[in-house]
Length: 438
Ligand code: SAH
Ligand code: SF4
Ligand code: F3S
Image (cartoon, rainbow, N blue to C red; front, side, top):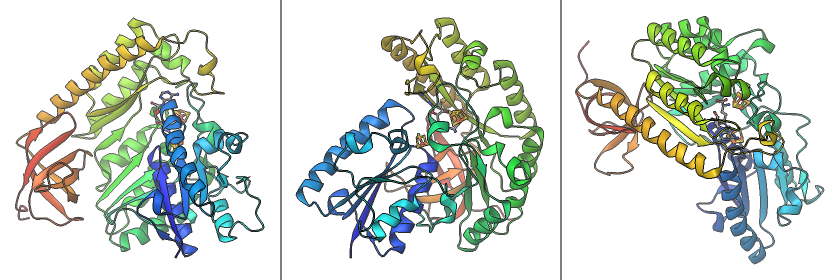
């Protein structure tokens, strides 16, 4: 049997696309190989959001080149966002690559592999002309009790630093009926938690006569689901009906990932985020007032072109003011073709480095304070498996999306009450409690 291996970079959308890539290859009769070295078909599902994933990919492709030299029958395929961004150059940069495809043309890989390379020219690139929802392709699920569900593709925003609109295209929503029937079948297969995915998940629906609040309520009405999550929402589209749906739908978790990017209104404007610091903070206040126990997480960028020390300080103070449960922190990375990449006042690398260090410090302190407040409480945990750091403990996630390592006997997929006894900035530790009699 021929075997494949998929290496995935980037966000949850890419991780989910990889489940579809695997599903397609399995439909063609290929089995999964445990490593790149043992595979006949090597797929790299790439990301190009910052420079770092580009560099990591180059290292992986160095290994792929050696494997291909050893066995020229091996197929090397490069898909995803980096492939799309470099579509004119990919075969010049990496001449040993056989086939490439963007995020919208995953089926191209299957056509190529299915034809055994025959009748399809080596060095061909998927056209994306029939941009396909990965959600319609066969699925190889990585996790038994949790699933991703794609609800839209692409992004209509024009954030000046961001490459995503260029590589993922304009936003298109999937039909509600299609989404709901996918969720129904997942629930009937034993999935307890779904995460709805979109580049801008809460702008969903305008093009299909629906909206995100309506979709949340419809998913919540499906039997058998315990938890509903979604990512990533844009603050500009976080309207009252969505907040109300979050508050009223039992399965929708008390967690909002709300990317702030910068605490300075001037920088936000240059980023084209379309909200001010004040408007964001008002949204946070409204969310907290409506959804008790809400966890808030975010994405932050330091060193955007022209960011002054005082503006950076505003990002620090916003972290304190909001009190994030966690945050992804990034050093601004210029991406070719984006508006911000050609701005004159790029910030020096060493200034960016100093800023990210200070920011990480504040983020960790605030997160640890938030987590420590939870000590002594009992939280519902969805068991995911054995702890990654201590095999004597189990691992799971709270509704607020915090990882908990705990002593207990529950099986993966179960929901159990866990008493929280210890907290760091990123994880909780505790012990399983007997369920409280109703
Ligand atoms: N669609 C999502 C995710 C975008 S990418 C959203 O809008 O929230 C995830 C994060 O990467 C962004 O939120 C941003 O913080 C960061 N990011 C995007 N482009 C970047 C760049 N050029 N340099 C540094 N960070 C970047
Ligand atoms: Fe990028 Fe902005 Fe779209 Fe997010 S909303 S994917 S940051 S352009
Ligand atoms: Fe990266 Fe593409 Fe996701 S650029 S972050 S894999 S949308």
